[in-house]
Image 1: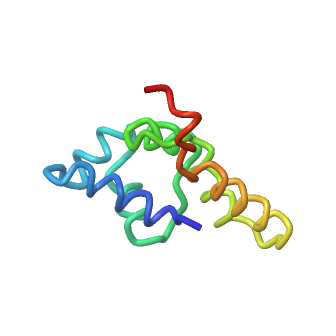
Image 2 (image 1 turned 90 degrees about the vertical axis):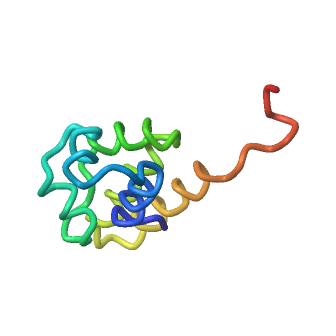
Length: 99
């Protein structure tokens, strides 16, 4: 499962010249929100997940499933969110690509 902390680190890696304040501006959140995600103190909000997904070019539900996974204690839901993310993050099969 890719965590909120890992997603924000991927965003930082994609925009290496941006500091936390600039990343916050890109995502449309406060600098403390970005800091909380970097430290793992909080999960990414659903609205921010959509923007981060756009910036990383990944399905929004892949990031949202991380936030839901991090918030639940229900093992059945954890399995569902994990499977959802795994399915969404699989590479597209060669035959399905539109080149």
